Amino acid sequence: MSEGRLVIGTKRYSSWSLRGWLPVRLAGLNVSEEVIPLRQPDSSARIAQVSPNGKVPFLEHHNVKIWDSLAIAEYCAELEPKLWPENQDARAMARSISAEMHSGFQGVRSAMPMNLGRIQRQLKEPLSDTITKDIVRIDSIWTEARRNFGGSGGYLFGHHFTNADIAFAPIVARFLSYDVNVSDVSRAYIESVRKHPLMERWYEEADREPEEWLVDAFETIE
Ligand SMILES: N[C@@H](CCC(=O)N[C@@H](CS)C(=O)NCC(=O)O)C(=O)O
Image 1 (cartoon, helix red, strand yellow):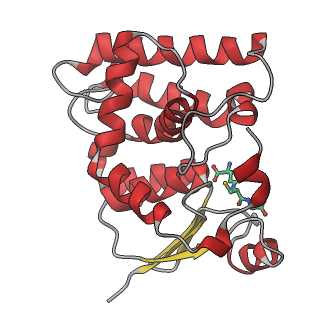
Image 2: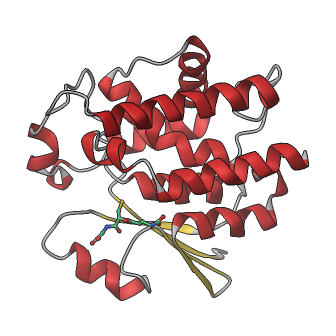
């Protein structure tokens, strides 16, 4: 029997939903999934009916309500401790970079919206200092984590796909769409994340979403 529900937005576009869906799936929560297509006339009203902050992702598990992707990630890690690295130093860095992602990188976020169906995208404007600074910082975070803690695994902290990888998963999708130039270490990391079975599944499910859910503005603007 279902233990609750996870409410998310259109998989093709919703980067925050991806950050909520991945920990729920990795923790093996038996919850049903409800997708509310974003940017439709009734989207905000439908989301407001279920989610206290009027945003997705929203998780209800055994009648406990959790909103905001970072809170969902933490809740899932209480049930599946492998979602954070075991080593304390690694865990401290994993939490720091996840928080940094959650509250920052506005340049990359607004200049490179996530759209899983589009590749070889061009930026609307030349790379600004803010965007360049974000890209350099992300590249250095990935490189440092991989060098210090990655070992022989493919992810930031080794063999387990942790909440830190989840925080950056939509950035991986954006960097792939816009073919962003990063170091060799980061490029290999991008490949590993993209090939994770749950990322494959999310991309495939995004690809199967109804055509009516496509938002013109997201499909035509470069
Ligand atoms: N900080 C929030 C951000 C959530 C968020 O902005 N979600 C967007 C979708 S990607 C949303 O619900 N938009 C619907 C709306 O604002 O009406 C989180 O981490 O969950």
